Length: 487
Image (cartoon, rainbow, N blue to C red; front, top):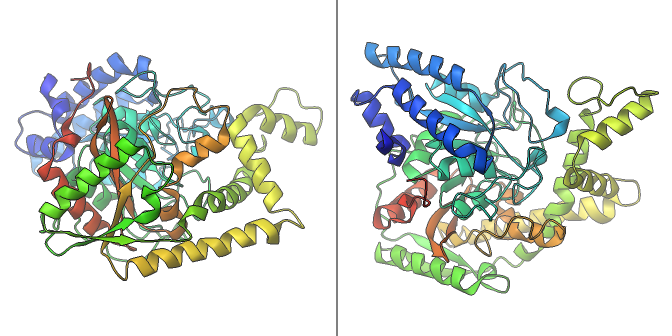
């Protein structure tokens, strides 16, 4: 049944409902592809094959009885940052290499309630800190479009799993672009919803005011299905927003006539690969043909987003990661001589270099004498960036620009240069600082490598973003391309 992995989540749902294939057959098909392709890609840390087949058999019973939901029996992968009851949950770190989660994250639980089947847990940058999926203790993930290239990070494993058609969809998290950037580098549709739209309960924290769960899928229609099942208020998450969840699939086909698209002036200036920029402008011509109007917009404080982010995020990470001390759970050093030795060696041996770098940076900016100079100032600039976006959305409906400055780069090319690595997120960080929904969709190829188009909207405008993305995908074929060797 080689054709099954060519189908989108929405198409697979139709096939299951029509009983053209069973959930067990579908799950086994993807597990076979995982067995075949994962050793070279290193995209999954844990494969839950036995549990997946058991869940698929139950899904088939529900489908046969007519008690199924629209997503019953569909297999997906979860980023290994989401706690999954009874399953190894590592966050890509040696620190949690022995941690079996005792409960399900809300995202995992809601998708399970919707009938979704978990194939496994996807590799990721350690504690979601990275832009290339090279900081994982389990080794780098390879990009299915070119095994010498990175897939982007930190949700690179989630992206590679879907790009190689080892799963039709996956969950991810986005703190500064960690869903959108991998989506751009692997030719997928990735959406980061509004901060608070999806519960963070059970999602291992990196930077609590920035982290947000989302999806990596083959199409905007699939993203709408996934997001509808994941979103909604959760009393266990104090940052969860109590607002009704619309049917995101209902407005996908709305016409775009009269839509005002803001071109972010700062995104098309220095740093953007010229050919990459041309593909983005070609995509904008498609929108003009659909009746949209282009308006140039300037966000003067946006160039400050990278330094602002790399003060705020490390500060929050240094606080969040203090719980990993070798005492309660996770990695513990051998034969500590006293409590201080236990702390120092457990953390020194359990954390990787990038995580240590960010903890040290964060601890420094929060320390006495530097808090006002760095952290407080960064939060003030964050407010200015959010105000810039708010003014822009007074003029336009959505903002569009590139997702990443360049296509995927070589594995190892930037590991010794953290600043260059951090600049890969230059176009994505602003949306996180402002808590806005944003997504990336495929818009072409450069030298055989995918390029992404980023769409940003006002708070809780996910339905509009998905509509704008879906209409583009109805006019183009970029999102249907499959890497050579994975057909």
